[in-house]
Length: 283
Image (cartoon, rainbow, N blue to C red; front, side):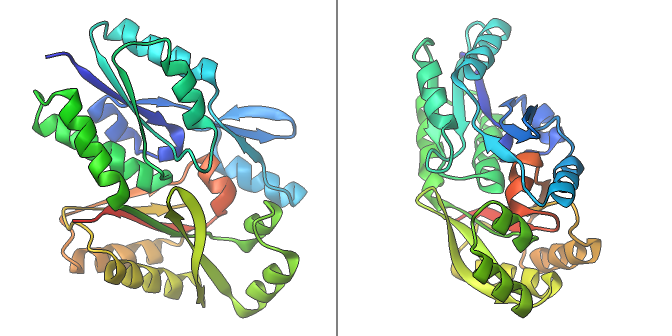
């Protein structure tokens, strides 16, 4: 059997130990500050928050380009000459990255792409589903694996609450009036992926401790998530007491495996400090 290699973008926010365990090949996306381009994954998240504190602006983010995908796929093919590459990509509805991957893929054989229509922990959930399946069934053929991956794409659910309306306002995602009203009333929007697009689906009121508990309660009531695995996403600044409480709630909900994922610089640019999210795959 030809070896199957999985690849994805840094926007999946995969924990480094799992990247190494499953030999997942990760290509960086980009964060731009003060006119300088930084690779996501190499830029400390704290630098993003410091930049906002200093300038009251958020960095811009840019997609992985065609050349970078060509380099990624060439590197994989060089290291694994007979491999079949399955690239599990960041939603095409919110970034040009997937389109760049499609263009780069034209120059390669035995290379397949899956648009997850998801980001951060949602994208990561699909990648890690594929990686675990490969580990369980090392002789699975690529056609069957791709079919299974594509089956879970619409069943992968991500919901998150940005840690700061300041970042949404700076990024032009909320108006000044909505920002003032939200700040005064302590309103926090819940963002979900709907058909690959980031959509504000509901609003919560209160501090993050209260809101995070309400989010996981609503999420588990709304979606029949497979209790084998749950992913919890946070951006730097989320209080440890909140993480401990959410972890306890997830365990009480009978999740066998709970994986925390830290949002990288690219995702944190939009989520701000202290953000919280949940991702899982429905039964």
